[in-house]
Length: 267
Image (tube, rainbow, N blue to C red; front, side, top):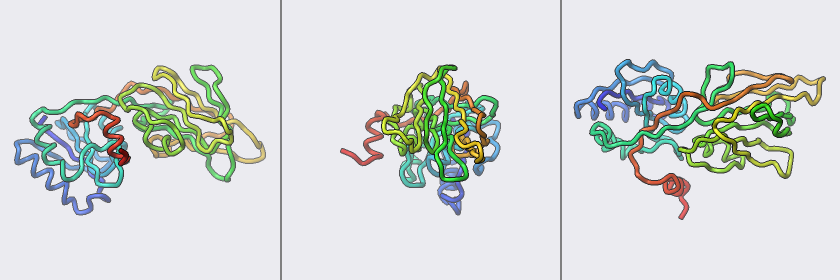
């Protein structure tokens, strides 16, 4: 792998100091490198992507990279990064390892919503909008009724997204290499409301139920934190595993549990 692109979060590397050092290092070692901001167009010749910022930057870059099946690796310039393997101090030796072919490719499943072009590496979040009141979300799996959640919303997450919003809402942590779909309610008004894990081949439908017809209840559907559409009572969205996957460049031979323990600073 010799031809690279750097996608940089300009808020994390404001003067492009690290970005330019990385670009120079790649070129000194016989490679080529283009630099683009978030949302930029990937060069035709790119073989691998370095993403500078944090987990959020990498998640946003994943949609762009997955369309062309280009692998990427994150460089953490933020706080706690579960998805970004590299730090500033380790990035230059990592560049050399990748250029020498000493890496692995790990595939991560993504989600898609029916009738929408957006994909999500982390999660699709359906959350109330407007007045501070619970909404009722009717959840079905493969056309069969599962449950009605009275909550602030619901998170449909991938294993990669299990360490994100879903974890904050009390959901379990899942090995990101796994293939399954995680359903986690947000602030559910039920004592026994738990996360539910279903197969990656399953299809989830979430419908907004009308509780108070006189009020204009709405929910917003977010794909990896980006608002995509609003649903009104009676409307629904169907979510399934995407045919596309995100390819992550891996250098570390540490297991997921070892990395998790290090990130969470536990013993």
